[in-house]
Image 1: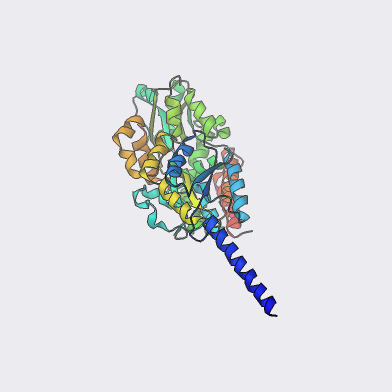
Image 2: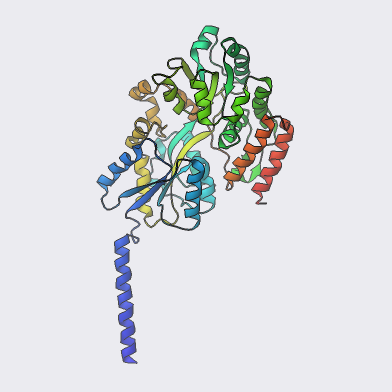
Length: 419
């Protein structure tokens, strides 16, 4: 008996030593240690340069960049599958702003201690993409807002200012564009996430919403939503939105405008640099203003990405510190100058040197400040699919606007209730 008790005590002591050694090796007891950052494919290569700066100053807490595919749906699938399984493979995830609510509701990402985060320096509107039901779950990293591009040379010849209202846009697209051999207006109207964005922008510009109470109620069957969807449906029916736009995603619409076929285009800020590059048929001929609305300036949907910490990260304190670093002014400047992405740090939009280099920044700042997050929902992917599918049918004349909104309200109600 004495020998058995002694052996037991020795075994327990050995286990405690082993556990202590593991804890010291992994840093689990402090929440600090090496981490991974998962993101969609970085096409410019700037992000590794940014992380090299972190790694140089944090040799014991180095960040390994994990690049997932370029396509957003593949990025979503790989992140969701890993997080759903409780894996700690990804410590920090760079997620589309549309996913933050869903990931938070599922318990995949952890609420943040915001005391170390530079949230007070950010454009106020972007904070809405990082919160869900009263808690902050992410650090805004890159923002985006839809802009109205136009042919300033054509409008100058016609003697008109850029449109501020839908009526002015429709009038110019219907009358001026044909005189110069152009189509009127296009956005991203293929049935995918881009159409959800275009429709949501039109609805909220008219004062409506798709969902309310952070995804708990359905509000899309309203007079404002009818006005917003009618703007797009009427444009297609009347011909100042060409039929070709029904097959446009971002790049197809950008190419059509850049090749000189469109008078007006709704798209993201990246188009400005591409369309202004040497060799572009419209270089020096384009202008940009905020999206128009029914009576005055409209409201864009916020794009971009947020940084979140995996709820199962082994080193959450290091992960949170990385979020603060990536949200700092110096890194945010590199987001713009090296990554060609719109930063979330407010003062950069009025930096004289940056405005000279990126003339669209003041317009983008206006648009971001008045933009709103996409409909928040724990089931956002299903919501987006429903909005795109039903409104696509309306654009193609298969349903009236009233019929489409009634059907969409019914489908969204089923999603919200979990049926």
